[in-house]
Amino acid sequence: MLRRTLSAKAALEPRLRCTEVDENGETTITDGEFKKTELIAKYGLLPRDLRKIDSSNLPHILIRPSAILLNLLHLKVLIKHDRSAFLYDLQAKLRQKNTPGVGGLPYEFRALEAVLTSVTSELEADFEAVRDPVIRVLSELEDDIDRQKLRILLILSKRVSTFEQKAKLVRDAIDELLEADDDLADMYLTEKASDLYRGVEDHTEVEILLESYHKICDEIAQEASNLVSSIRNTEEIIRAILDANRNSLMLLELKFSIGTLGLAMGTFLAGLYGMNLENFIEETNWGFGGVTATSTFFSLVVCWYGLVKLRKVQRIKMLGDERATLPRSHQHWLSQSGTDSMLDPRSRERMRRMATQKQQPPSPRGGGGFGEAARRYLDSAPGKSDAGRAKRWQELPEEGLTTGRRGFQPSTQVYLRQSSSGHSRPDA
Image 1 (cartoon, rainbow, N blue to C red):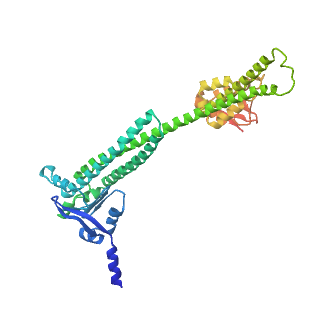
Image 2: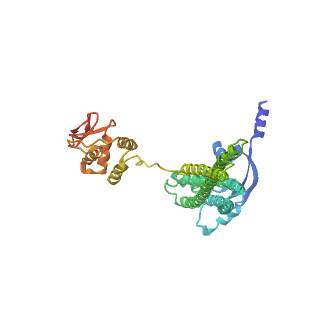
Image 3: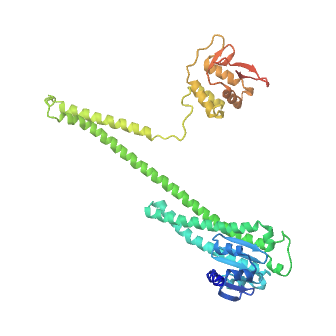
């Protein structure tokens, strides 16, 4: 029973189909089927290594003591120092790389370059396939905003976003490998097979190779990001245009409603005189003209009033004018001194509230009312700077202010006293 169960599990074990290429670019195994346990035993791997390569859709570049595993887009590759597995349609590229003029790159680097070349070529082809339709639709939308074109733009936007994410994942996988010096040094599989080991920072060849393809992937990702930004900007502009058109239609509808209301008010008078009641105005010579003129005037007044109210509603302010409630003298003084720009919102609110209070008459003992006393107090700041005036204003109490022999004082008997710095300030 146990043997039968084990045989059933072995039959259900998933198989991987791969092609193996030797160091000369010749195919040794074509589309062969292997169990995961067989591949692990043959290439000296761990089960978690194949799990990341076989079941994950995220790009990975894993460095192991005797192998390099890559999962990049359509390629799942295992590179040894003398052979490669999981390669598809790369035999010709490996033969081209195996020439004396290349510079004597080891086999694992030639296989890695073939994989990266295939990946970047696919990225460039996919980007060209998605970029041209997007540019064409965007140019057409500049002339005419059509519903069908917006639907096409939505579909293309999803495709571009998916491609952008894919390109960034490939770039990040290469970038993560470039940040790990120990993994870069472990990629020299041929030297490790000959019991030759490099230092942790001695990996110039493979670093230059990876950086060149990292730059290509980064350029593709940046172009995809720019294309996504163009789509987003176009969508925002289209949304703003549609909102403006919708507002214009609503405004036109309101104007027609106001005109209809005016005509209705005019016909109201005509309806009154159309009743079968004696009013004796029809016997006069001016009756028809008077009623017509009155109805027309009444209709025009109603329309004019409605349009004036509508115009007031149309006025939209981005920011309110905080100086609207201040007297003109205070506005002029604050604008010239620059103190208003340094006050916090709470102090500005206090200034508006105090400025709207009734100004007190000049005191016979000195002081010139609220405005003069406030100016003298704020001008007594050190150096008469704008920052000093703003600080003095923020120190004032909220209960109100009075003037007297002591100058500018709070109404709750807050007197000026000398501080440790030698300058007077209010204190309770």
